[in-house]
Image (cartoon, rainbow, N blue to C red):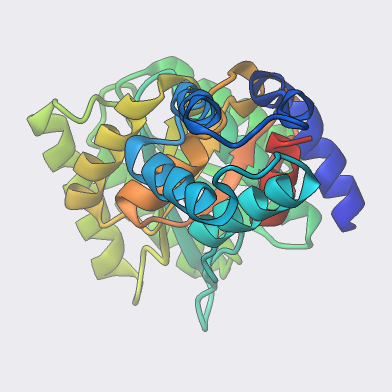
Amino acid sequence: MAFKDILDRFKKGLARTARLFDVRSWFGRKVDQDFLDELEAKLIRADVGVKATEILIDRVREAFADKTADEDLLDFLKQEMKALLQDPKAGALAKATTNPTVILVAGVNGSGKTTSIAKLAQRLKDEGNSILLGACDTFRAAAADQLAIWAERSGSDIVRGNPGADPASVAHDACDRALARKVDYLIVDTAGRLHTQAHLMRELEKVRGIISRKIEGAPHEALLVLDATNGQNAIQQAKFFTQSIDCSGVILTKLDGTAKGGIVVAVRQQTDLPVKFVGIGEGIDDLQPFDPDAFVESLFS
């Protein structure tokens, strides 16, 4: 997809956050303490996070103190924010040297996890890959049913167990089928759980262990789905999940439903995890690879 198309998608999805910043109202004002305090408050309200906000405000103060806010200041702030977001793995998925590539997906209930898996499967399918879905969320029958519907729509295969079945057993069977059929990608859904539920987190670790024993180097990605509207609570979730399954990246959903789009910066700064994909709408193609340049340009559009 061309950068302009990506930018248009991001602008539409991040419109609420852009309205919060209202950058045109800055122009012509003196960059004094009142201006910096106001900018700091907007960055905090957008959930950019205290750490990143302090860095950005200090750099703006050093470069523009007592000057007049203009396009130069805006361009400077954009470049500084882009620098905080840079990561060579942003928007890119790891690929195994031999099939299958295994993507383990985790997250709390309501984060958009199962829907994100469906959208990711569709994206990979559209790129010409064969997909197998492992429905290891056996606690919620609706989750496997939802995944089965998406699998049928995208022409993907699915392995599922009976309601209440051992998720690790389903993961085992999914790995066997993925190996036998030599599929390009195995995407494993897991039960939505709170990071405070220790017994469920141990079960997630067990699923990961089965996958790693069955397929060399797997999981090649362990993606955590976070709801952007949860703000700073999403940061705590990321820290706990990373301890359990060694997350390799984040899918950040519902960016279109919040004025707190700055959470992308906070996630990157406070967890050191790359943001791989962002959800910026309800459509099947509204899960987009994260592009730091398009993201920042959209925040300040």
